[in-house]
Image (cartoon, rainbow, N blue to C red; front, top):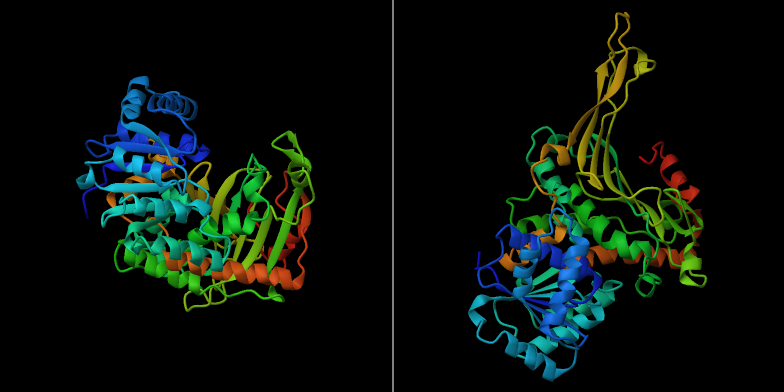
Length: 487
């Protein structure tokens, strides 16, 4: 492991992500003494302002987005003292030269660059860094999603960045990988002897992954319309979760071994066609309704015009390899859902033979279920069968829950922002929780097959009222296989 970078260059420093996540994360890392000595944060945006004006904005952001019991004005001042601000626009060589002057003399302190900008600015920003002499062997660059809008555009972005940086210098961000519970999937599978032997088609009937949001467009009109739920959520967050659930055991916990196995799983996803999308996918768009007691408008009303962009998608996926052959994976995500939740359900097969009466009927025998909740609360819940107390001659079984609340189990531990982990790993040069180029391309290959199938089949948007779990056809998608969504 190389020495951690002590210079952090943030593009898009005046944006919403920087205010809500990145600066609060840096504050928390400073609070825990996890930032390198002599740490320098060079913030960059298009707005013209001096250091003091920008530091005042950071103080406001920390006060607004940190929990009240975490906010310490003295610590905020310590963080702000590490920050300088330099306005830079892509393509302005003079501004990049001035930026280089701000970090002159720190060549031995490493440099980590974070692009919290639209993807269209990735390549010109990287070229500006190169022209200013800021790309060295120890320079690292992090890029926020999306990396393109399909396989072709993704390759174009990666080619442009790859022409200036080696792959080991590139850190593609999916913030879900920074969540403790997502990382805990690795511990659950590979750190417990009772799960991994059953983690295959022999014991598992099906898997569900749900990522539900209660919000609508929330100011993302210019980005979201034309992108939709499939590209915005499935291509990155859901497929990353899927790859961790389905990957083979890596030889060791290091970036290459882990990501090698993830990409194998992603490449095993069965492509969809114009025929299979009809029975294996649902596109939906929310209409007016009520979410958590609040009346909300429909997507077209928020947008101000009719649109064919989906705000909900449900999919039935298959992974064609030895471990998962025949196991369906039901994926769904949407906006204006009844609750905000991210959840994985592993449905095990029933016992092969019931000793508790004929076929187990009348005894309450149910297959085991493992539920892993990622947000808002974090827990792991295993539903098992137990005998119901009583003196009846016939044994009556009842489903009981073994519930591990990670929030309660680690009550003394502060719940961290996902970006804290990712920034710390970026500074340290650890790529384990970042997405490799071949992963991105495997994800887009599958997503493109769905989009192509939709276009060829002429798949229409199905309306659903805000506050519901998508169109009725999403319920039919899973129930015709004899299963039900876990709501």
